[in-house]
Image (cartoon, rainbow, N blue to C red):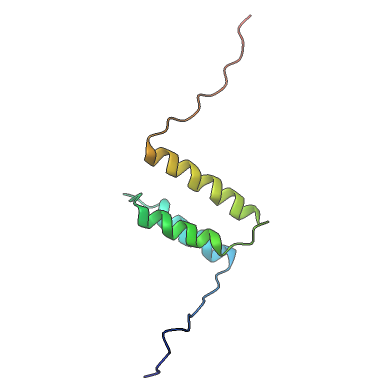
Length: 84
Protein backbone atom coordinates (compact mmCIF):
# COMPACT_ATOMS: atom_id res chain seq x y z
CA UNK A 1 0.00 0.00 0.00
CA UNK A 2 1.36 3.40 -1.00
CA UNK A 3 0.74 6.36 1.27
CA UNK A 4 0.06 9.51 -0.74
CA UNK A 5 -0.03 12.81 1.14
CA UNK A 6 -3.44 14.48 1.00
CA UNK A 7 -1.93 17.65 -0.41
CA UNK A 8 -0.95 15.90 -3.67
CA UNK A 9 -3.56 15.60 -6.38
CA UNK A 10 -3.41 13.02 -9.08
CA UNK A 11 -4.23 14.64 -12.42
CA UNK A 12 -5.39 12.38 -15.20
CA UNK A 13 -5.28 13.96 -18.63
CA UNK A 14 -7.77 12.68 -21.17
CA UNK A 15 -7.58 12.92 -24.93
CA UNK A 16 -10.35 14.70 -26.82
CA UNK A 17 -11.58 11.31 -27.99
CA UNK A 18 -11.86 10.09 -24.39
CA UNK A 19 -13.62 13.28 -23.36
CA UNK A 20 -16.12 12.88 -26.20
CA UNK A 21 -16.77 9.29 -25.09
CA UNK A 22 -17.35 10.38 -21.48
CA UNK A 23 -19.64 13.16 -22.72
CA UNK A 24 -21.75 10.68 -24.67
CA UNK A 25 -21.99 8.49 -21.59
CA UNK A 26 -23.17 11.46 -19.53
CA UNK A 27 -25.83 12.79 -21.87
CA UNK A 28 -26.70 10.41 -24.68
CA UNK A 29 -27.70 7.23 -22.92
CA UNK A 30 -31.32 6.46 -22.07
CA UNK A 31 -32.81 8.02 -18.96
CA UNK A 32 -30.31 10.87 -18.66
CA UNK A 33 -30.35 12.55 -15.26
CA UNK A 34 -29.79 16.28 -15.74
CA UNK A 35 -28.84 16.89 -12.14
CA UNK A 36 -26.42 19.55 -10.89
CA UNK A 37 -23.89 16.74 -10.39
CA UNK A 38 -24.15 15.78 -14.07
CA UNK A 39 -23.57 19.39 -15.10
CA UNK A 40 -20.55 19.60 -12.79
CA UNK A 41 -19.08 16.48 -14.41
CA UNK A 42 -19.65 18.02 -17.84
CA UNK A 43 -17.96 21.27 -16.78
CA UNK A 44 -14.99 19.26 -15.48
CA UNK A 45 -14.69 17.53 -18.86
CA UNK A 46 -14.79 20.89 -20.67
CA UNK A 47 -12.04 22.22 -18.41
CA UNK A 48 -9.73 19.50 -19.74
CA UNK A 49 -10.02 20.68 -23.36
CA UNK A 50 -7.87 23.43 -24.89
CA UNK A 51 -9.78 26.75 -25.04
CA UNK A 52 -9.31 27.00 -28.82
CA UNK A 53 -10.56 23.46 -29.50
CA UNK A 54 -13.62 23.11 -31.77
CA UNK A 55 -14.73 20.22 -29.54
CA UNK A 56 -14.76 22.52 -26.52
CA UNK A 57 -16.87 25.05 -28.42
CA UNK A 58 -19.35 22.39 -29.59
CA UNK A 59 -19.71 20.69 -26.21
CA UNK A 60 -19.93 24.05 -24.45
CA UNK A 61 -22.81 25.09 -26.70
CA UNK A 62 -24.50 21.72 -26.12
CA UNK A 63 -24.11 22.12 -22.36
CA UNK A 64 -25.62 25.61 -22.48
CA UNK A 65 -28.60 24.25 -24.41
CA UNK A 66 -29.09 21.41 -21.92
CA UNK A 67 -28.97 23.85 -19.01
CA UNK A 68 -31.59 26.05 -20.70
CA UNK A 69 -33.85 23.05 -21.26
CA UNK A 70 -33.43 21.99 -17.66
CA UNK A 71 -34.32 25.49 -16.48
CA UNK A 72 -37.42 25.48 -18.69
CA UNK A 73 -36.29 28.25 -21.04
CA UNK A 74 -38.14 27.79 -24.34
CA UNK A 75 -36.11 27.27 -27.47
CA UNK A 76 -36.04 30.09 -30.01
CA UNK A 77 -38.60 29.44 -32.76
CA UNK A 78 -37.22 28.75 -36.22
CA UNK A 79 -37.13 31.74 -38.50
CA UNK A 80 -40.08 31.86 -40.82
CA UNK A 81 -39.77 33.12 -44.34
CA UNK A 82 -41.97 36.00 -45.38
CA UNK A 83 -44.92 35.01 -47.50
CA UNK A 84 -45.64 37.10 -50.56
